[in-house]
Image (cartoon, rainbow, N blue to C red):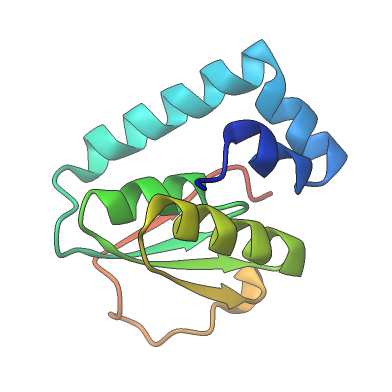
Length: 119
């Protein structure tokens, strides 16, 4: 059975889940996603790095659009949440636990790098 929004929120840290459930959080997330997807353009066959991928909302959306996405996050809980989200959506993400200050990838490996609310 596919994971529901409510199921996904139960596995997030409380502050993160509270933001996602709030009206402002939903509006902000939708605007950020729309603006980034418009700016990136057709993502099919792109190699995209999502720095601070969190629970994988944007990374999953990009993978659904055909991109090969790597998500980087310092939190093992967020990596686990992103893994669950990708599995529920039927997409593959390369998820890496790591520090954004020392991105563990060689230069030129990605066509595009995105980062939302990582500071």
